[in-house]
Length: 418
Image 1: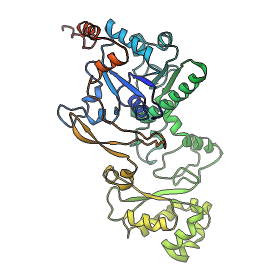
Image 2 (image 1 turned 90 degrees about the vertical axis):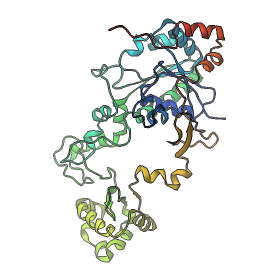
Image 3 (image 1 turned 45 degrees about the vertical axis):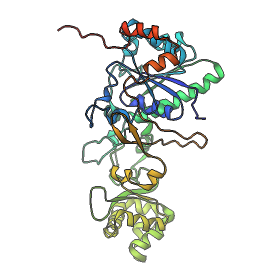
Image 4 (image 1 turned 180 degrees about the vertical axis):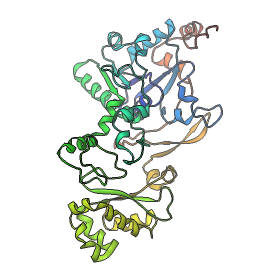
């Protein structure tokens, strides 16, 4: 049995933040019904690489779901949503500010329709506060949540992270909230409203940067390789580890853009590491004797390690350091990861088949449950399960479905004349 078998989710979300979370729930066994407008989730056509096929942007975020199309702005389509809410445990939405209210389904209405429903919303900045009416995207959330100001090098511009911490990170936070609300419902019988703001989620992922922000009031940050004396905000510090142990990326041969090994220099491994790199002279150099000394002279230490690394590829150097029990890892490109046996062995790069695309690959389920492993299935085509859901979940007969279709419940409204 899958962990979330028996939980039904009405997924009104689109693009990335919401679909990331609902896909995880689908992989854990929830029946996720993705409700789309007749034109489909906008990402079906965005960044399309195969003509006439759903884009990878859509397929990689919507596996294991059932798709139904519905015109929520029509009276009949709106009533179908009401009927679905009566049958669902969770409803998820990430519309812009005010949209869900204009569609007629604020939390107060949803709770009235089904008091047991958990309603989960993703907003850029939440439903309260001066920023509540602002729109947000991935990089806007990174900019305003502290991610960009602390990523990069001091003399350069702020950078966005390659990982989608604003969208996908928020989706993960949302699922945690949904599962907590469902657990509480088991005791109270009542659903509740779950809200996660993208800005809040990024701040949570930047927690250690706010640790350092407060430490600045008591003096410079010795573990940083850049000057921090007198600063009021946590600086950008390149590839510094940001923790109690020193760390950085060391360039290896042949010197390509990803020919680096990230190395963490723990106190317990220093003697063995230093001796292997520079013999007794390096190991006994007073500039590097203790961690406090290495912090003061870390740029010189990294320079010496980089000189040593120049004779090795990142994989060769990783083997040398692993034998010394030094924590390290090569900078792995997407190409590296797609072909890596460890990744394949953990089912983190999974091949699927799609009626439009043919064979394609998706990143797998990162959460491994011993008694209920995820079964990853392809994403649905637009409206693939509309009739199935109306019959199985709502009990509509063919006559009613035909009547709704004739009334325009499943089709886009005609465009207004110019």
